[in-house]
Image (cartoon, rainbow, N blue to C red; front, side, top):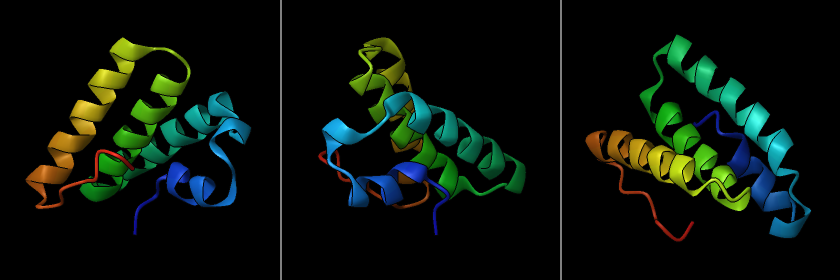
Length: 85
């Protein structure tokens, strides 16, 4: 089970209705908890969610960094995330 906030939020709201700044703050907290717990899978998914939020907010450099980090972690765990998700 992942701590990622984006996964649960995306199922309940349309993309245009998402408060990306709020989601960004919550996802940073989720990432901090995942790091503290040593939960690599949640760290990977949190990085992906942070990347998607950064992309939605127009921060393309940070989006690339976060998406790359999340993808790297998840692939190292044998999880191949869907890039379209």
